[in-house]
Image (cartoon, rainbow, N blue to C red):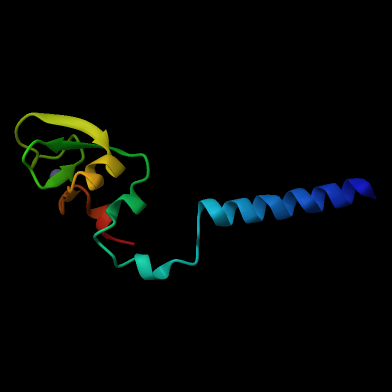
Amino acid sequence: MSRIVWAASLAVILVLGARILYPAAAPHLRSEHSRPAAHLHGQMVAIVEGGKLFHDPACTYLHGKARMVTAEEAARLGYTPCPRCMKSALEH
Ligand SMILES: [Zn+2]
């Protein structure tokens, strides 16, 4: 019996934990392009000093000396997703 209670408690903890990590109830953010990092969590992207966009390192629209940063860092520095290679970040 105590085993069932323990298993049920664990299930509740997992569900609550998942809600905290992946809040499903945030549809108002889906069209908010100013926060692209929400869709690119932890992804490494390429930026160019003085540029405005961040790219997939393989993007053909990436010119100059690029450096790799996380998408969060790029967004914090004021970069926005490239409409060609970062299309997935602009959708959803
Ligand atoms: Zn690009």
